[in-house]
Amino acid sequence: MLRIFLAVFFTCLARMATAPLQAGAQEEETGAPPQQPNFVILLIDDAAFMDLGVYGGEARTPNIDALAARGMMFTRYYTSPLCAPSRAMLLTGMDNHRAGVGTIGEIITKEQKGEPGYSLELEPGVLTIAARLKAAGYRTLMTGKWHLGHEPDSLPSAHGFDRSFALDASGADNWEDKPYMPYYREAPWYENGETASLPDDFYSSRFIVDRMIDYLGETEADKPFLAYLGFQAIHIPVQAPPEFTANYDGVYDEGWQALREHRWQTAKSLGLIPATAKLEPMPSDLRPWAALDEDEQALYAARMEVNAGMLEAMDHHVGRLIEHLKQQGLYENTVFIVTSDNGPEPSRGDNDWRLKLWMKFHGYHLGTDDIGEAGSWAFIGPEWSMAAASPGNLFKFYSAEGGIHVPLIIAGPGIAAGMRQGALANVTDLAPTLLDLAGATAPMEEAKPMTGRSLAGLLRGEAQSVYGPEDPLAIEVSGNSALIRGDHKITRNQRPFGDGEWRLYDVKADPGEVHDLSDAEPELMQSMLADYETYAREAGVIPVPDGFNSRKQISRNTMKRQLRSYWWILVGALILLAGLVALVWMGVRRLVRR
Image (spheres, rainbow, N blue to C red):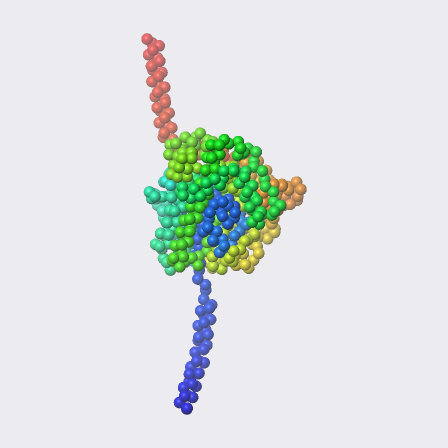
């Protein structure tokens, strides 16, 4: 008995002695910092607010819809009206002028060219989310559209990305290694800072995902990662494999006005807009559907079918990336961001003889034969873009709701699932949000400060808003300007679809921007204009000339670029012409003498 008693006694003493150590070990384990999340940014090109299936669009996007069900779907998120400025804002968390990308090369004016804020590449002291996360131990990967400079010091490899396969242009062909418009001599692709070519079996959405999967396998698996995928879908030329396009046969046969009204009604039924919200009529200079003959209607309906097919094809390849992450055990700890750089693209390809002539020289056609496949240059044009932008007004290039109000989905660990978020948010908020989620908020000495705000509080359910009712949020690209404060917005849209005049709207009650309140509420109008002037002065906005017209500016800049690229052909042609004139003159003189 004594032996048993002593054994129990010494056992108890041993447990008492080790208990504090065990408790300390448990505390250390539970107090360990959480694992840093991975980040996947899926940037769609030119998608309207309602294009995705979960937002009520016609395209089948089951993989993106599943992400929305897993996370938070934003209904009041704003971007800039053009691609490169939006990308600069997304990657840096800074206003586009402060980042150096006040506009794009296609529409820059002579007054802006070369000025601070208009270098059209990220300027000194502007750090990307890749550079910041890399300093925090992340591997940083990028595939797809870059459009922020092609010099060695302006490519992704010089801005924090470990691996990159990047297109430095506003767009390119989706099937072949060639340009899509006369502004470009070629499709400028670069891999890790070096000129690159595309594989023979290239299709943009598939390749962008394939290359990202390659990079994930080639880099350090023990590090968290940032994967930035800049898709070409659904930028012009609108191109898609026929098996995806076939899913939309007949969907758009009733025309653009019918689609505009359908999306408007769908937005009300989904609660995306108030039931009392009005719809702005189609601009008078856009064609009524009935004005097209049967062949034209069939062609334009087919182009919109390809547009939906291109979006579905992109979603299909996004699903392949998601499946890969699941197989690698990375999915559960990955935060996904899905958004668009701006609203739908209104440009046409059939109303400019110079563009059509260029297409012939580059192997493009505009017809229904093999539409959307290699050699097809499909587009949706301003009428379909106006319809796609419903319930908003106008489209890409403009600061109306149709140009800057786009979808945003954020899903992943620690983010409330199946939530719809109506708080105001901006593209500059994404970079600080990711840094917050990564626990990498320490300032970097060489970096200019971000202008965006972290949305992490919204995502965790700890905050109801990040912008107060009196906090102004301003946007400007090439004279197309907006300032949002609370429920109100002032906006100015330039030609050809605007008039350069400021207007005031209550965009919560009137998201279609139908009722201008500038005369009814002059004090509010003046207060918001004062806020905009402060923003423009501090950001370094250089105004466009009176009467600025983006369509004319594109034509002017393209002609100048063509002359710089092909001056030797012009000189040769002039020499040849002069020689022919001289020969004719000499022949005439001989005849006269005889």
